[in-house]
Length: 171
Image 1: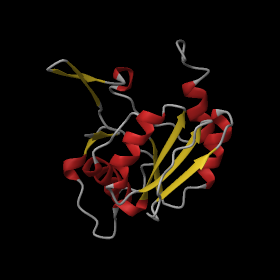
Image 2: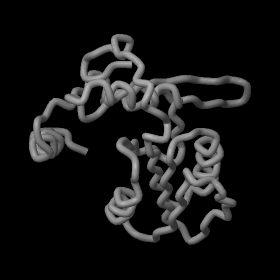
Image 3: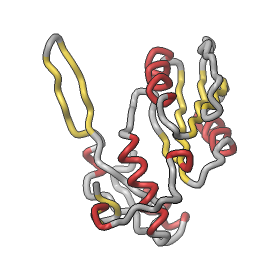
Image 4: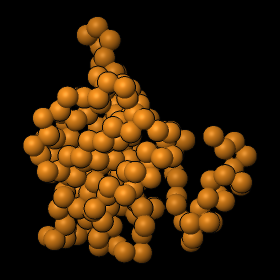
């Protein structure tokens, strides 16, 4: 796992850091099956979970866990993002699609790295996609356009400019 060009093997473990210091933010629109699977996975962890679900069919969840917040909001992505941001109470957060699952150990390593290296504002990692067809399991690299990505802009405005105006093939 690389973080701005540095290898995480060089970081040390900070005993004060815990999974409860990270919020997993899931913005979903419909896709109840994918979201249900994701919730089942994340409930087994100690991370804080914030789910903003744009749906006309809210999930019937028995949410006794204090680490899961499920909000139905039939609004656009920007408004759901703002709602999610106001629901985060942890130092760190990661946006997760309703069909993505991250290795908890990887998230913990990233959080530990940020704790021990306050000069860094964000951390990235490699991801893979897993699919099955009949009895065949396939694995592929996802987000290949992010390979070698470095977030080195000094200000929020510089970062926005880099990702929009200066990108010829901005998507």
